[in-house]
Structures are given as structure tokens and as C-alpha cells.
Length: 139
View 1: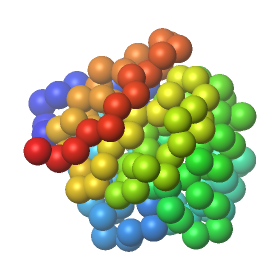
View 2: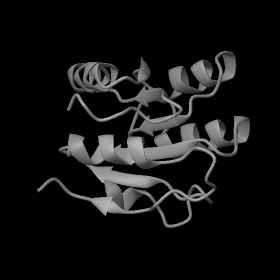
View 3: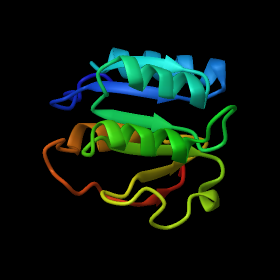
View 4: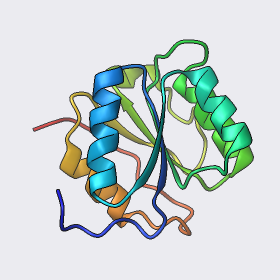
């Protein structure tokens, strides 16, 4: 959706084991002005977070090889407590309430409603300590 301004802070780490889907989503986000790194599993995500600056936003799947999305998000928050977390999953019931503390993550279900993700990224202010928690479904 070209034309919407990118978020003020636009570094995104996308963690998803589905190669085609994650590459397509990363391409869309890059087209909309975001700086996106993609990793395929939880261990690679933790390694990336350990050696690189922690992104402004972490978009992660829940079910992955080697480490799940909750573990990745907890590690990211240990490195940078204010990192925004967006959980993109086909299994929203696997994320227990309060599993990631505050601010709670935004939970989007697959199939992804890209305009909703883009709006969440564009409207979230990284200096704000609260990030809306919602479970959204594609219309």
C-alpha cells in the first residue's frame, strides 16, 4: 500500500519459517519504507538479536523450529524492553494471556490482513509504553 508514511522508527525483524510468505511480506514492507531483516527460525532470530541492534518492531510466528515466538519475543524484550511485538500466527490460542508482559503484543491471525499490519506499524509510536493488544482476522 504505497502512499502511507512509514513509522518513525522502521527497523523490523520478521521471524517466520514459511520462506515464500515471509519474503513476500518483507518485500511489501520494504516497498512501504521499512527496513526489514528476515530469519527463518527461533534460534536464528535470537542469534540476530544478540549481534545486531534490536529492531523497533519484532514480527514473529509462534510455532517455529528451535525456539518458539514467545521465547524470541522475551529475548528481544530482555535486550530492549520497549520493543514492539507483533505476533503473526495461525494459532492465536497458543499465546497465553500475559505471556509477554507489558506492553502486550498485537496478535494478527493468518491469513494476514496487510493493511491492518501496515496501519499498526504506521500508527504505533515507539516511545509510547503501551501497544494495543487485539486479535484480528482477515475480513
